[in-house]
Length: 89
Image 1 (cartoon, rainbow, N blue to C red):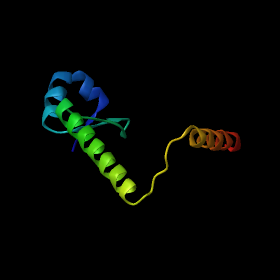
Image 2: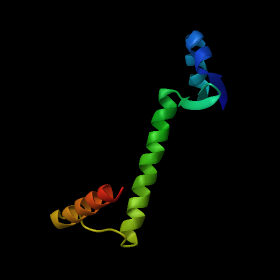
Image 3: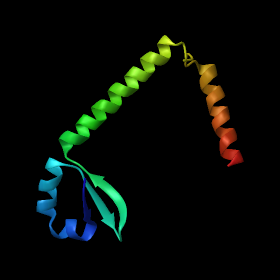
Image 4: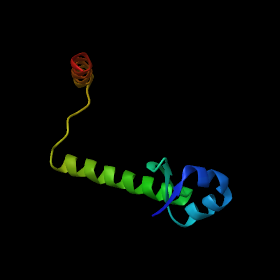
């Protein structure tokens, strides 16, 4: 993956946009990584893969009976646990 300082990306923005159409680019600021910029096509592909992986995991959980029905009672229990965690933090 190519790396480019933010200042250079700003000064050469057109060329920068052309580059991200071919491959993702790591943007740095003061030698510290701050962002990865990618094309819309790459972002859509990544989101599609994440969605498919999530669905596959969910189906596997259902198949292995690792799920719980989301009832109002269960929602209240989750909310109570969340509030308890906030108080202890």
